[in-house]
Image (cartoon, rainbow, N blue to C red; front, side, top):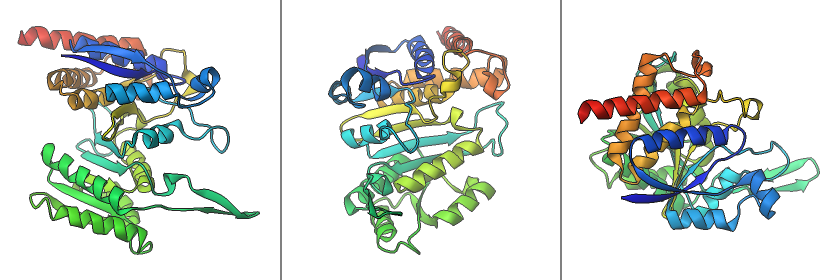
Length: 340
């Protein structure tokens, strides 16, 4: 089956890691036609907007996009393109698997959990205003609709992927109405999934437990801000954001991306680590039903890490971006030949 997928190279190291990822995807033999679009600063320069209509329409039409990292100015300039994209397409579920890779020094080499983050509201609704000079108010939005939807997604994900437990993370002891509503919606959905264990953790205790005993967690479902913070914390437990895949999923489409930044300081040097985006590509291939291709890429990435001779310098190796991609291509070909 042929797939048409929107391809967004991104900023900084984005074009380099996207090109490497496209190479290894195509090495699996999956039939994909790439439709290239732009966002962010490039789009603003060309079209006068950071999120062009043609990019949104491309994703709506194709239902799937693979996206490189985008630059977001801190405290000035344009607002987050990533947040804007999620709002435009109602990509309500941010899904980030956290699993350690072979030969990567980390605190918890057996760690295997999944973060499911609500993606459309909370403090990220962007409702801020100056009350009086020197006083700014940010409004936290929590709705029954969004809370129910993300809880249902988390339980369905657990069931579909052989997971046993879903943990809701909240601060309902303090924010009794907003986080209380999120927690109420979670337990209402839990009743519909009696085969999946359900529990909850207060956010501060959750962070402590993740550092001390992360093996107790399986699937975690969180509001937007908590999910943003905790997903980065969990990435740190396995070696950093360079190893953390991410998917943004909704009814109108799905965008798969590396969750790290655009790293402009090393752009153009050919040394960026494309692992996070390649792992996101595995999520994408599974999402479009290309499970054999996803398995080929997954096994090849694990084999390259297990071998340890072709990893990038941020992980202690010497391989450049293209050399790392080539090693994965070679593993895919060798594995395919062995099973032919």
